[in-house]
Length: 96
Image (cartoon, rainbow, N blue to C red; front, side, top):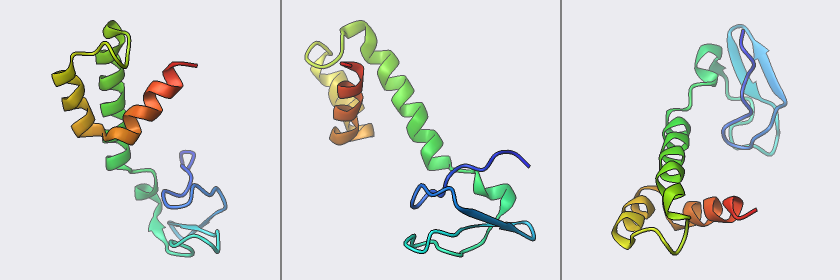
């Protein structure tokens, strides 16, 4: 079996694997002890789409130097896809 990703709900790594099912064992997690078929545990289509969208946005924004110099219309398109908070996080991390 491949390495399991952390719980998609709490980020926890205390996982129980039993009979082909994976369950998060963090008692504070909303998905506590809810088994998911082990072959589906690492499948995160929304997360994968978001990662790809971030990659595309960063690659697009790079030639413009980031915030403030990206053409407004194009920036608004990216913002409508990713959201203002995500854009802010990207720009903060790229400034470091």
